[in-house]
Length: 110
Image (cartoon, rainbow, N blue to C red):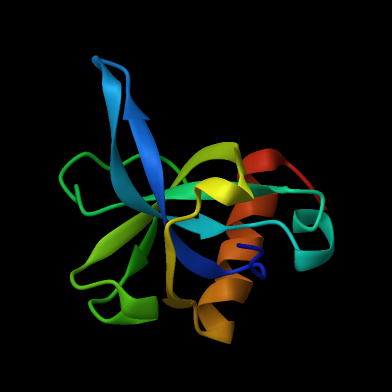
């Protein structure tokens, strides 16, 4: 599946304490033009609100198909598009702009 930037998708997410993975939401960061190469750059989405990290971006329940309050976490990774299980929805444009700004800040771009 090839998605646009700011799509919220479900992907297998490995855990460091176990070789097994679970399906978790993630936000596609790269553009569809880039993603056509067969890979997408993503950021983790978590509902673990108690363990905040620098750069976390809050999402209200219902945003892009997420059932509860969540955080976009600046844990970035590249994943083969064939591993995308499903698309939950898209971030609203205002949230996408805020995420773009957050990425620039965290990565010292622009």
